[in-house]
Image: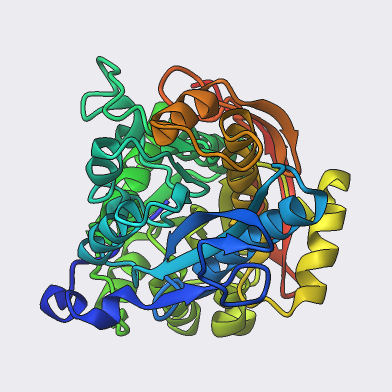
Length: 406
């Protein structure tokens, strides 16, 4: 998932862009030794304030619970884990600064994040140069793992980068197949926010929809941060489309769907995981009824393996939306912790530990709370499960789960 406009980059380069939340096992102990144990930090990068913060805080919360569990269970003898979460505000330049800050902290042996694919493009090289493992629970742009020419010749750009979310190459096609086969839609109006995630997802949906015999009634673009979609609503209304597909995030789509319905366009808005947030429904209200999204994996609330995680999250007071990527964040952090357990013995961190941890993550294989966790030769998850959700009676309801093979 995800890319935000590089708005106010100059402002983002201020110290405020590096808002730090140090939140280990609910304390701020930053000493090198905790109760006679070696302190190891799992870094987190995500938007913790502003745009996308509900989802970003869910990522932070998922990692926090994984770290708390590891400490409680003494998963790595001689080690106490802490979380250091940095706020990228969904701005690529801030993500790059955060990556540098995490690399420069010798205690950081792994990082979970970022949320946005566009932010990831500015972080990958920084982590690769330092041999520091990075696992995103949400990035879906195919080029992050398979290179810019992924459609014709796949090449892995960075061996330190992994993800527990499947890619838009599958998500776009899965959505197109559902729109054509299940919804029986014939004419779609395609809109995107011109960002890495949104534009890429919309392009793949359009390709899949037309391949299935559907027609594109029209196309347009919006800017991140836009709030007035009246001109776009008129275009869509005149197009006679029976479905609107939106490549982007909930910040704009929650306003777009409301203005569409209020303007007399009574057709569903369909989007990707960027729209999959309770905030979308809360903001759009009743006008969101019937709208659809695709998201990675199966609904975490339906998985017995995630029941304990959900119970702890709700009891913890942690903020954010755990339902979108919280489970994938927990599994990403767990993969790093398991890799550290194979490298760090009796609390002693060997020379070259970061590079050794990268190698161990590549060999990862375990049953996570959100599904099986392992990575292919590109660093992509081998879990290709996807789900279509629809707003039914004011809540996201899973209406189809499955895989897409193109």
